[in-house]
Image (cartoon, rainbow, N blue to C red; front, side):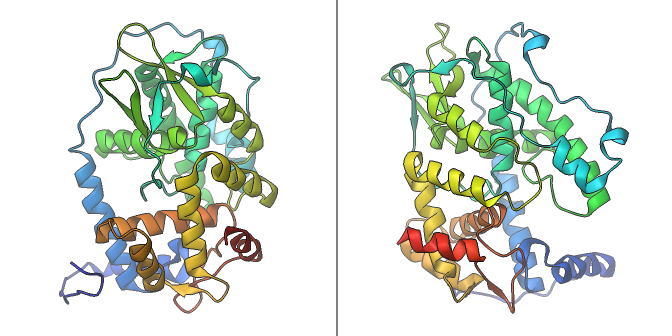
Length: 352
């Protein structure tokens, strides 16, 4: 179905729900200009969410291993105390504190082979991925970790952290929980979403290499080595340690500092070409004069003709959201159009 093919439908919605939707649009949250944009995105994300449930899991959890609690940094905080100061609390208690450099996966030992594709649009925020990378750093001070044990540990921590962010979100009315699991009624979907889109996943091949997907692998921030038992071990690469140190102390508050944004985008340019290219295309689609959602979708469809209509919409939205996180795109639309920030305009010039 082409992007221009549309059909009118009449759907009855509760008045209270419509008012909540209108409130979100008026506040400029999410960059929606109309009810139609809001409802279209909501339907697309719901369809994708239901589809994710059917994804085959990578395998059962391995036998539990002992992790010295003195060498881990689990999220522990007194919520009432942490939230005593709303905005300041969000910044100080969510800052990425990078531990001392620990185990490093050497290039020659790394079995991971990233797909080299733009990140799927449900990865619509980079902070959760960098948070997960920081967690891995705290878990591997001396040796790598069986990958399924890492997933299990970090996903458990993500629920705790997501609950904390939910409290901040309710106090500050600022969206901070994106990508973190917060809905226990959809536990499996939430956990699979965090694993796939905030961290990344893997699958073995006949030649003993491992095909990987998702941000931490695409950014070459983590690597996999032979664990001798059929399950790979995960650790941070030299590139990953440099990335962590370049984004140290960023928090859930957006946009991130420009000096950090420059370092992050430079990392993508050097180590994640496909991700960097997608950023560049979306920024250039908006351009100095701004662009409507349809303008962005049309350019995206031309650059990636193999993408489905759903992928075009979802991936474009994901990169726009990430561009806002890094201060490249204005938080709110103006007359139904996206606009670059001054930093975004300068950055776009370098993409040519």
